[in-house]
Image 1 (cartoon, rainbow, N blue to C red):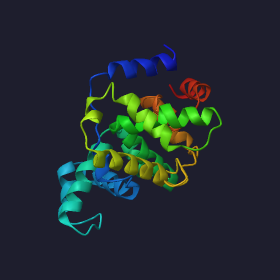
Image 2 (tube, helix red, strand yellow):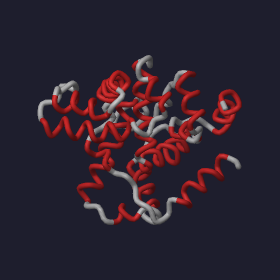
Image 3 (cartoon, rainbow, N blue to C red):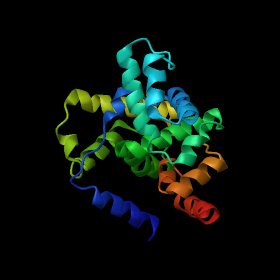
Length: 222
């Protein structure tokens, strides 16, 4: 089955479902994700990691509520990664750590993945390097049909979804800033690309790789 047909199948199978939108509680948090991934590698138990983060304040956050919120959301992200991807935190460069954390966001939050793979990637393929507010608004409106909860959240939450998503993109280096929203194609190491392809190559679309590039990597690493 070709890549475009697969993407259509993923969209069709999502009709009537709901997006996970809890990413508004924290942005990319790649530094915190790295700490927690390394703690999990060391302790091999999420209860022990929670104690280190919440009780011992290993993330150096001021309030107990912040520590609890960060732990819950970052754990959910890290749990989407394969064991090999999670282990890669222990040796990844700072650039790969950002991309690996962005991958965990793509895997947990379909909304962020969809915008990157459907809107940002298509603009880049057309040599259009700036994201406009109208791009986001058209995307959001198009997803209301398939994802019921986009129709029930408040206007304030809608604004927060947009604000935090673009902050995640900025922190990951997918755009230059939340103000100008100029698109930047990220650099992924061969090792990270291999880990993504061996898991699910569709995620390379959200890192703005074109179909031919993805097919080449699939031949190489699958």
